[in-house]
Image 1 (cartoon, rainbow, N blue to C red):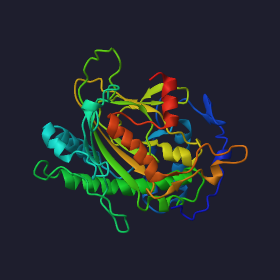
Image 2: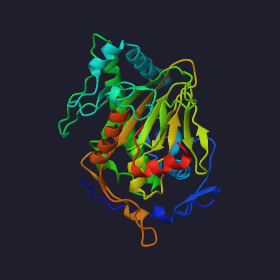
Image 3: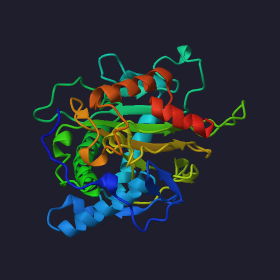
Image 4: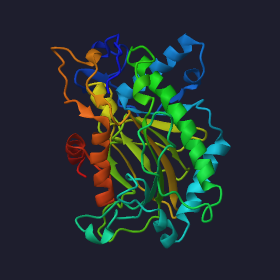
Length: 364
């Protein structure tokens, strides 16, 4: 699937004038920021004020050029709702392991369900220490026109009363938020704001609840990652984290900066497919997480990627004879599947060939 849209504007030619350049990539000037901007995205959620939406687009553009990470406010979720999401996640991860395993990932669940530390088969995963986290992967509910997909092994109502109703409602609302953010990304690239609409009419969505156990000293003296350095695989991620801290992103100078909890905000970050779409104009940012507290850490990663049937190829406005495409076209669903297969096999963050090379340069 490739929507019949004609892009306008020339992001590859943008000089990002006035931006103090302390890092560069592909001729693009990037600032080595030490804290993430907070962007009020409320104009994207309501029709009317075109100038306000374009202002949001410009803010997204600058954040994506500099680091590919930013906070969002004005997203339509109350702090109470966000807090309840984390409470419900803690309820699930507090269940006995045998109960959680009833919702485990299976060959027929299309990579949805519970994943214990070490992956699907921890006993066979002895090549390296896995990331220290448990995860529960949940899908969106089917919509009209969807290709049928396998039902996820949700926790039973008996085991977790009210869990399914709340999470399904939150996921449905985050799908709407993701569609609005996609318009913000279009505006940020000087495209018509509806340019990505067809790609997210039936989006790929993975809602991952993440549990990081309390910190324990490492016998090897090495960091025990909750999430080892990686990039995300889709177009963008909407992240909710608790107030324990531990998340870091790498800026354009290669320094790791803290991404602390800011009440009432989500964190949005660029993924591999948006990097490929924009020919590295927006970079899929390396990030990592480690729990240094003596209490469990909880987060909720909402991974968004285009309709799995769609082809992702470099935007015409992000390439030229002097700036040829760096990436071959890929199928959205196949790209995501290849990386998630690594996650389930190893219990650690998956890495594309490009990401593995970048991680290697950091010494991890």
